[in-house]
Length: 103
Image (tube, rainbow, N blue to C red; front, side):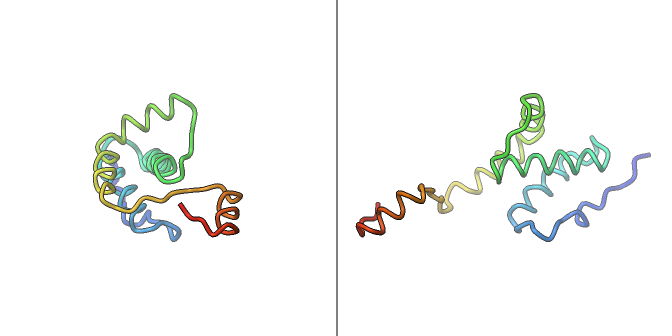
């Protein structure tokens, strides 16, 4: 018999509430399919991809994407009506500030 995984004990100090909820959802969905170490690794890979834009070897990316379909869809739906960040190059921002023109 597989030991129960205490998912709530796996939250790290540096995770935001949003990141934790997404990682927790992933682990809850797959807790019966993997042992604890693999589950933690896969969930971390997923959140690294989703939140940090990390990239891994193609087979890993495909595997995580397949496992994350439901959680990812739910997360992206929840983000639809939230503000989106826009990134600009530092040189562009400095130029706009100097000219006092903002887009």
